Length: 93
Image 1 (cartoon, rainbow, N blue to C red):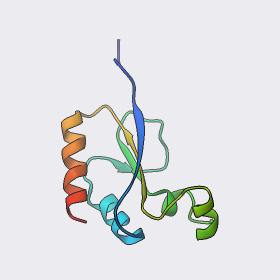
Image 2: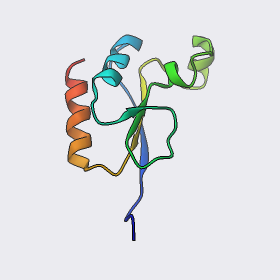
Image 3: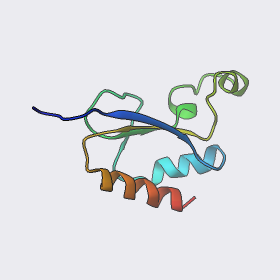
């Protein structure tokens, strides 16, 4: 068997604005910044900037896409590596 268990996408909000959220995205080292969530590697995106950049803030707010939202698709990397990388990025905000 190639894999045991499953992957997952985690969505969470940063305690901050668009720019603090962007700093978290720019500070992580492990995941690729990408909107596609179908690979085996960890991916991260800020939906406001990547997927909904052409929508007005009012429309994004109506559908629950806040400037502080991050989507993280957990890949097959070691959990401790994923967690420590994300934690060091969040600690810098």
